[in-house]
Length: 311
Image (cartoon, rainbow, N blue to C red; front, side, top):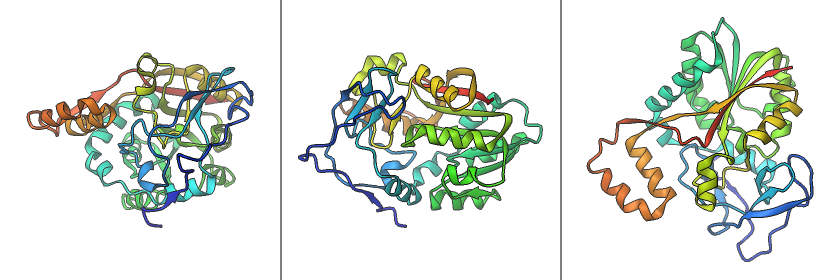
């Protein structure tokens, strides 16, 4: 599959369908929270890169007046979405490898001692977290749909499954730890995916995930200007909605905190310019005076880190 794989979208002049129920709780009390931004054109696999710069470009985003979940509508068809993910190629992610390793070395501490436990990293991409987990003593495997990324991870000696999570759940394999770093917001049916995650865990097994937080102060202050309103984010959680879904799926939430990313100064400035166009000239000017390779830890409180235990 080539990277030009596209997900068909209705042209902007066409009246888009309106959801009749919340994708999480099923309630029919919905409201349009953020109108579509940008032209509704076919999106190729590049829109689903981890390093996408498509900030504040998205279909309509609706909110549930009951549970508070936000989600884009219409959702891409499952088959088209899986096809697009399989075609993702992301060379910039490789250029940021050292900083991704720093990010994962920080977060792996939340998993506790390895003790030889078997771990599955869902959305393993190029395998950088697998490297850190193996270094720490976990028996690490990955699950990744991108053929490009999964091949890179396999080249480092890892077992990487290129199949949907629910297919892996129907295998005989079981794990002590599942990780999902910045993954759940990309899934059209998080309830189904968490049910599959629970099946893959042994009783008492741990799930650790990170995702953006719509209830954070930054998200609430910025509103429609929040950079993480993007095509590739299908579902948006806050702490209560994610905790409720995990408990419904058969998990006990153990801890909810914030998640930090380390990125290069150059990458951060590019993100800043893409997120806030008015600041783009300033960001470009700073790249001429700031060492762009500098690692910069970023934590604005709008990414959450959640740990849960299978009941």
